[in-house]
Length: 291
Image (cartoon, rainbow, N blue to C red; front, side, top):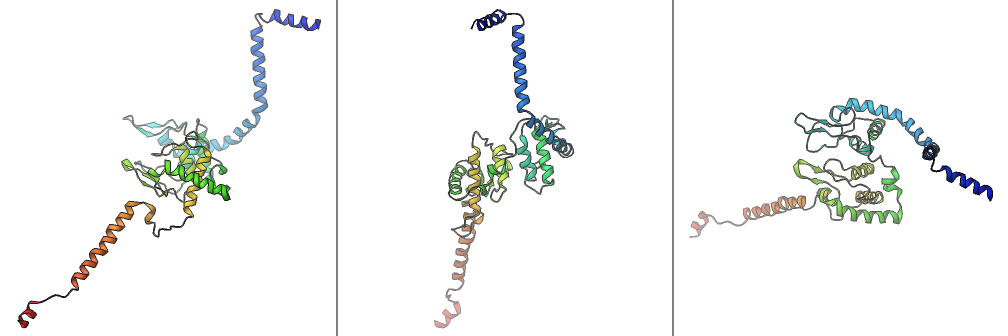
């Protein structure tokens, strides 16, 4: 006990010495470095394994994307100050996987909206481009399959997801994509594309990144589980029969009204003309003979 009191007294005398603060700082740095060394090796190993893919993506980027987006993804401005190609430093790998994977990028020509077209890159090249752009800054990563694939659901769980996803879709998506995901027109030459039959991964990435005119539904707006529910609802539409007969593109009252006017009223007018052409008519000669 006496020895402990002596040790405490010795520490108390030296705690306010000129080197006490420095020693505390050094001990803190040593402790922080030790914890980092214990937990960081796996992450550093992953980054070293990914460096070759990032370098491959950089080479592809310089050849195919740098003209519009800059050599470092910083974006390109025209002489009058308008944005020629947006910056990609914080869009994330998910945005690249969506845009390039669906063939929207590289653009064929500037326009109000970039249409989907055949992809010009292989899957490995798309992954390399996504890895490179993802390394430029923050942004959402490419989601795992269990986050968006409705095939991982079964039975009652699938039906619960479909019901919840339908409510979310009707509240947030029908104004642009139609009540059955068949798409629709948008202002200023844009349009909401058809999302039925689209790869679930691209639907998830579109909600996550908000491409072009679409709003961004981050995980704070729509949690990942609710995004998966929306995809499950769209998947259920692909397998649902049309109980009303011809769907007419599932575009709602516009296509139905056109059919009603052109076909329905057209048949009525044609039938009226046919009746008028086949009714009994009197001639002047017959009237004179009878007279």
